[in-house]
Length: 478
Image (cartoon, rainbow, N blue to C red; front, side):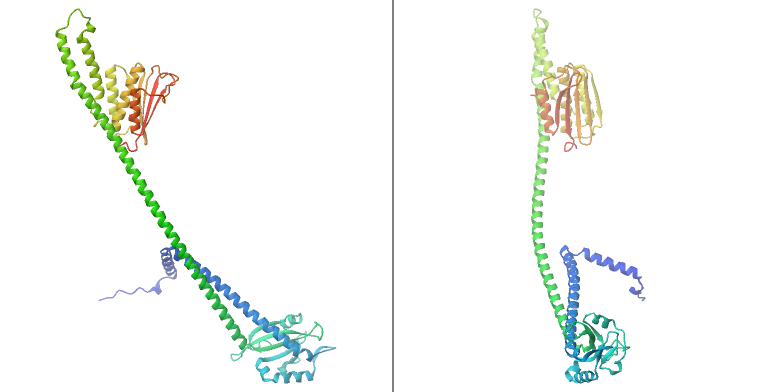
C-alpha cells in the first residue's frame, strides 16, 4: 500500500503562506462579536500606550537617579578636591602634598570600594591628577571636560573605562563616570574639572528595583483600566441587548398590527366584491321576476283586450294599446336589470357589448376607443365598468339627445379610466360634480367608490357633458 505524501508547508511560497494567514485572521476577526472586537482593539491600543508610557517613565526615573548621583558626586568633588587645586601662573596645579593627601584619602577601604578612579583635568585636557599615575601630565581631548568647564555636571554609565585607549573587558564592572566643575574658592569661576569613576552595581540594582516597581504599577493600572473597560462594555452590551429586545418586541407588535390591517383590508375588499356580486344578483332576480310575473300577465291581458276592443275608443287610448305600452316599458326595464353573460368575455368585449346594446336599443351611433385594456380583471370590476358605460350612455341619450356620444377606455399599470361624453347642452354653468347627484349618477358613484375609484362629472370645453371614472387595478384584477 502506497501512502499519500504529506503536504510540506515549508514548500509553500512565503507570499501564499502570508495570504493564508491573513485570510485566517480576517475570518476569525469577522466571526468575533462586536464586543470582542472592541475589547481586542481597546486592549491593543491601551497596552501599547501603557507600554510606551511605562518605558518613558522608566527612562525618566533612570535619568533622574543618574543625575542625582552626579549631583552628589559633584558635591563630593567640590568638598574634597577644590582645596587641593591651586592657581598658578601657568594655570591650575596640584601640589605634591595634595597628590599625596589624595592618595591617602583614596586608600580608605570604604572609599576605595566605592571609587574606581579619580582625575583632575585642566581646561586644555591636561590631567593634573589621576589614581593612575601614568596618566598624570598627559593631555586627552574630552567633550565632557569642555562641558564641565561651562558649569554642567554630567554623568553616564559605562563598563570599565572608555577613554585613553582603554578597551572594555568581560571582567570590567559597571561604573558611573561623573564630570563636575571645581570652582575657585569663594567664586563661581571654574578652576578645573574633576572626574570620578564610581562603582555602579548598587546604583543599577536600586534603579532596576525602581523600574520593576514602576512596571508593576503600570501593569496593575493597565489591568484595572481593562477590567473597568470590560465592565463598562458588558454593562453597555446588556443595555443595548435590552433595548434591542424592546425594539424587537415593538417591531413584532408593529408587524402584527400591520398584518391585522392587511387582513382587515383583505376582508373589506372581499366584502366589497361580495356586495357588488349580491347587488348584481338582486338586480338579475328583480329583472327575472318582472319578466316572468307582471310582464306575462300583461301579455295575457293584451290578448284578452285585443279580442274585445271597440271602434269607438281612439286607437292610442284603448286598453290594449295602454297595456302594450306598459309591457314595452317593463320589458325595457327588465332587460336593463338582467346582466348579460359576460363572464367569458374580456373587458374590451364587455364594454363593446354595452355599446352595441345601447346602439340597438336607442338607434343612435356611439364612437368608441379602447387602449391597452387588460385581458383579465375581477368579474365584479368587469360588471361595474359595464354598468358605468351602460348608465353613462343612457344619460347621454336622455339628457344629451344622443348627440356626439363617445366612449374612451384606457388603462396603464395602475388604473383604468373610462370617459363617457356627449355633445348635448351639458351641465348648467352653476352646477359641478360636487353637487347632489341624480339617482343614476349616484348609483355610478356608489359602484366606483366600492372599488376605491373616483368619479368626475364636468362640462366639456366646447359643448356637452363628460363623465370620467378612474378605478385602480391594485386589488381589483385577477
